[in-house]
Amino acid sequence: MLRKMLFVFIIVALVATAAFTSMGKELWKPTKPITVIVPWGAGGSTDQITRILAGELEGKLGQKIVIVNQPGGSGSVGSKTALDAKKDGYTWTAGMIGDLGTYAIKGFLDTKAEDWHLYFGVANVDVVSVHPDTPYQTFGDLLQAFKDKPGEIAVATAGETSCGHVGMESIKKYTGIEYKHVTYEGGNPAVIACVRGEAEVVPQLACEEVDMIRAKKLRPLAVLDNKPLEIKDYGTIPPITKWIPEFTPAPLYFGIFVPKGVPEEVVTTLNNLWEEIIKNSEVVKKYASDSGAVFTPYWGTEALVKAFPLIQNNAWLYYDAGKAEISPLEIGVPRP
Image 1 (cartoon, helix red, strand yellow):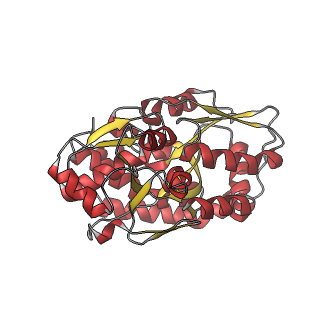
Image 2: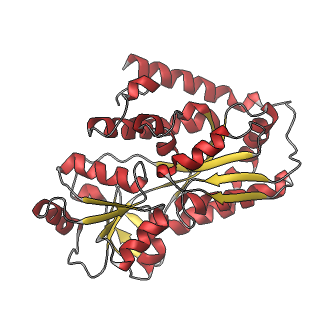
């Protein structure tokens, strides 16, 4: 507990001074296109917000930002490509901070959140949906089916460490259910798999499911939150706490990540762009509103403070479930 309090105190102190660290420093003027490696498939949550953020930054940077999809290893393959690239500021990656913060725990990639400069755009929430031909009309119906048929109901997710898998593991922790995990290379493929009937259930992000929900090709049963989710042109999705009152949600922050070691002027420039452009972006705000997400333009040390509870939750969830290669304590993540 003392270690956790000390960590938070240090980070909060850094946040208090962060606004002054870029004053008077030289700004970056890139001379060639910038590559952002999206470590998931096209059309998913990471791909969506990355393309929107890139569109907002291109004009100010004066260079094209090229999005490259490189799925594999639950996001760790593309992340490793960015981590191993030349530290000149021209190769970034993207994703959900809970993934980046737990790759080392899972044995996928030797890195942690503190190894990266963090730039968030939105926070997403998971929605548990089912194929409309299934008999489950409420989450209570589905929960009972999981209990009646342990390990038989197919659940499509974007793979290990994905938001969907973490969501299902959280449900399992609270209820003791078992399920058949079917993995795909991204949230969008997992959603499409459920629409096609390859799986009965998909617990991916609202932004990945929203079009299929509106088209009535998915039936949403619950949002993994303690409050209802309003979906534009659809209606209200009830919170999972209606059935699991003790469920504790954590925001799933998505954004762009730049490996530490890049030139200081790159970081200064991105900090300024997040403060001046992204924080005031109507485009990002509209995307959040339309997709059932929350606008969260945090960067730097503030982003790490916001993300730390999610990293703690995910890391210890894997460890307690016997799905971790090392203890979270080995990378400085105390139990929440």
